[in-house]
Image (tube, rainbow, N blue to C red; front, side, top):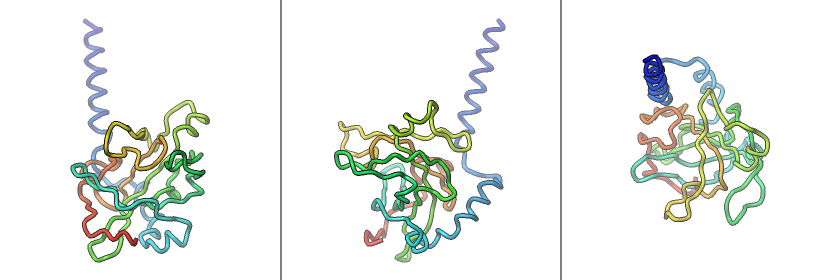
Length: 194
């Protein structure tokens, strides 16, 4: 009988951990508020480009899941190397957000862009060569991304296999702080000139 109780306790603990793993922020988190304040300069996309960020994608959107927006990356933090089979490649294993390797911007509805979040991205091959554990941020394991050639959609968004994690610091995401896509955002009105 004690094995049954241990199994039930384990299942309950796993369910509770899973349910709380990506809930939207309802309580202020001082560390995230401080990070949001530190990254406030990047709300101006011109400040970002003046400090080494370059646009590496159009406005990324999914028909049912939501939007990621434009990705502005710091090539030095990603350790970018020549593409492999037309895919972005790199040696980056940088997992910090001060500064972020990638900034996420979305159309602001007035012809400009607004900062909505940041992304941490490490290339799988480089990460596995240097680490025996998966990349994590604040206890959250990154998502593994690799294109499935049997589908029409490019699940890796033009990148070689990698791990990534989105952090929606500047725009509430009903799917959760670390969700891949934000259904509250849209690429409507996106100007590819950005």
